[in-house]
Length: 443
Image (cartoon, one colour):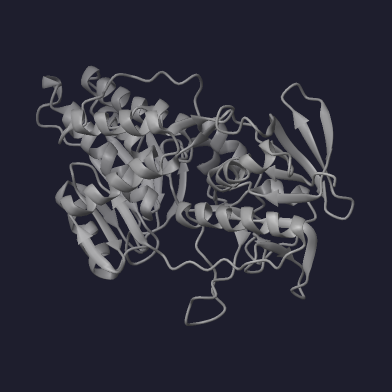
């Protein structure tokens, strides 16, 4: 029997976990496995705030793909198109050449990108927070702004340098500002030239509360924690423009700032626009509970599957329908395991299984051994939540050596983030943010 060819588009959490789950099948020649990914490594994104805060080294969050996926063919390139009827995908390799890949089953695991809005100055001036390069650059940038403030005698320039604006009060925004503010506060004490100076840290959120993924009581506790640390949180507030170094808010305030971080959500990868995969109202690939792509009538499309951040997967366990699983790492990993089983069953002509998962909980770490969490319905905060968060990520990181180094780093840093050495990123990652913004339509 001919080995079915499985083509996995993307090697983020979902694609990587799926490919690893199928690696023994590929080694036994029960199937042929191809993974298309432009990046050489998987980025463990839940740890990016700690990279920015200096608690975790950038290299510990990057897992090279070649070794764990050695039984798959890795194609380094970007997706150009997919014709699901002809079962062919076209990929542009790193050298610019195009290659047609014929498949029996294609899996969309392209992930998500930072969601942008048509705000004047946003694409030109903001820093995103979805990659190691952005997190490491932001750490260096914040430390450099403090050094600059210590060297200038211009009061206005000093104020601008010491103002840091974050837009978006979800998990990522809250964790990122908590880590960086604590890092910066420790660094500020090392400059006698800045005695008496205060930094201004602003978290802008359009909704009525931050960390909305948490229950209201933990969200309120998180708000109090940030404000106690000196972070000014503005709720029911939007950013209207950010041109010429001036951040203009909907409440009438204007803040001169050299640092603007945009963490206001994600959207399915716009590369999906180059395919004929069926899409839901928010741009995700429409799926059934078996992770098959389906048309508007709910009919599965032969050989087309999706999971992770770019898939709209129905949550059949929810009391109120329709309901869909949130795009997070917890679901991506578990969807990948179910999809691996369904691909085996599809090849054998067996009935497929449905993805049903009740959330294990939510976790957030705020530096300084503080965090908030819900574990199996039990709310936690403070040190207990911080410890659970660390244990979970140490287990979830797909590399034993990195887990060991990660734990050693946390123990070594203790209560104070001590790593303030510049990382020295190769280029300003604001170019990545501009590319993401340009790829999204704001008609």
